[in-house]
Amino acid sequence: MLKFNKRLTALAFLTLMVASSTVPAVATQDQSPVEQLCRLRPGIKPVCTVLVTDPNGVVIRSGPDFNARRIGVIPYQHDVNVRVTECSGEWVKLAARPGWIHYRYLEMAGD
Image (cartoon, one colour):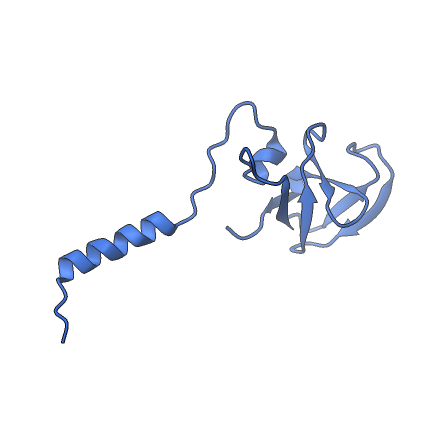
């Protein structure tokens, strides 16, 4: 039967837990709010899954502007894939269909 050193096993377990945990990317001043929302890093595809956090849902707009035409709504706590573009500012583009939503009503889904 194998003998285990309890202290060494505990240290190895804690090291594994810390090393495998997800640490959000540190926001930099030159990142837009949506880049920070999606925790984008250089070389990573600019698509992420976000969750709607506003109890009223979020309005889908035809362009990245509050004055753009309303084309739909995503309900509270629904997740959606969005694309971050360089010119989007505080807006993200829906990845699978037309439309834009403001980052203020969203949070990163999952890790």
